[in-house]
Every structure is written in C-alpha cells, then in structure tokens.
Length: 119
Image (tube, rainbow, N blue to C red):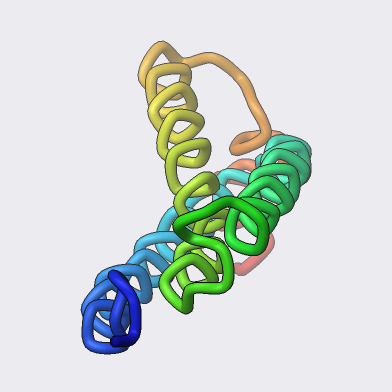
C-alpha cells in the first residue's frame, strides 16, 4: 500500500532536492555581486510560471496527483529553473567581462577612486 511513490522514496528525493537550494544561493549571490537585478527579476517571472505549471501537474495529472513526491518536486522546480537561468547568465557575463565590455558590474565607483576616498 502507499502507492508507487512511498514516503521513503519521497525522503530520498527531498534530500537531493534540498541541496539545490544551496546551489541556488551561490548563483544568486554571484548575480547580485554583478548587479544584474533586471535579469534576476525576469528570471523570477519565468520561475513563477514554471511553479504554476508544476503545481498543476502535482495536483491534477495522474499518476502524480496528490502524491507527496509531486509536491516536493513542484516545490523545487523554481529553484532548478533559476539555477539553470542564473548559470547561463553568469557564463554570458563572465565572457563579457573577459572581453573588457562595460556592464552592471563596473558602473559604480572605480577601485582607484574608492582607494583615494579611503585615504
């Protein structure tokens, strides 16, 4: 009994899924450091859309409907979506930085002007 997706199976998936949150936090911190807030906002909109789709699947589509595993997966779909989007963006920004292009990461005060301000 208990269906195909038992509680022990759900806990094994939960352990793996919760580790995605750590990866997400690291990538989010990298994008925050690069001040790419507009992209982060757009990515969050995409993550909301993927969450809505995932929660509909978790509640309506058999064999996953009303299974605990479906809710665990739906809960972490936005994290996985943001990890993929943030990783792609970080790669693009690193390439731009390597070419010496200007961007959100260098629109503030330069290091030289900050050093002179500090004394």
